[in-house]
Amino acid sequence: MRFEKFEALGNDFIVIHESDVSVTTPSLSELALRQCDRHFGIGADGLEVVLSKHSTVSLPPDTDFAVRLFNADGGETPISGNGTRCVAAWLFANSHWSKPEVTIMTRAGTKKLVLKDRSGNTFRFEMEMGTPYLRSDEVPVIADRPLDRVAGETIQLSNRTITFTASSMGNPHCSIFVDSFDGLDWQTIGAEIEKHPRFPERTNVEFIRVLDRHTIAVKFWERGVGATLASGTGACGAAVASILNNLTEREVRVRTEAGELQVEWRRDGLVYQTGEARRVFSGDWYD
Image (cartoon, rainbow, N blue to C red):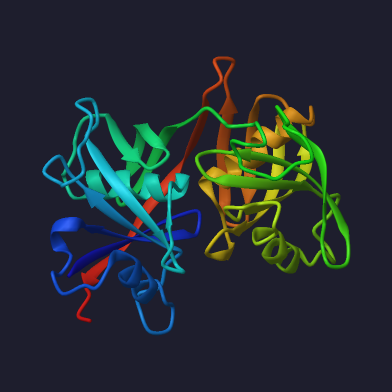
């Protein structure tokens, strides 16, 4: 089975086409679990399976491609911003697409990506991320009463109480503001919040340090993956939370451990994200 490995700010994905999947493969979830293993497999945060118009999945006429995304734990998830940019880079790198714009259907809706720049195997895209969901039933998060916006809510953990803001970019996000990352056991906190009963579909968790009105630094705990260097939807969730709490302007630089993403929440309600994706290597999966 042919595969290629891409990364976007250290968030890495295996990209394959559904036509290359062996008929003997038990399931795509099992394939993701095995391929994403960093000791016995290829190693990745997730597996992106590219579908086409000839797929059994029915595509709208204005959609060029579709994808299914599986996390490293084998669970299928609606979308990854970084992962979708990696799929777009795969399409351009392999000459499956040449127009400046491409539309890709995810389980969180169809996303339009515009190629802004290319240098060798590195591609820079502006991606329409859609409108954030803010109501408690949309995220979803369990609340004492229905909330139009989940901001300034508290959650009780095993040894502390955390104040958070929640949103959804097609997948749930719990955003927490911190003064410093020094001495913060954010991975333990993230792991506990991910599976907290208040989040019935589990959640991604972002820890945000506001640097100024235009810049935030973020650490990411990703649902079904764990600690990651970056997250596309997580960067959007962090930016949306910062704007909702009036801590930043509507255009925000999101600093991750592996570089920066640009996020803009426009007045029409749509969130746009600009960032890179890079082809790392290709190979054959023999198992």
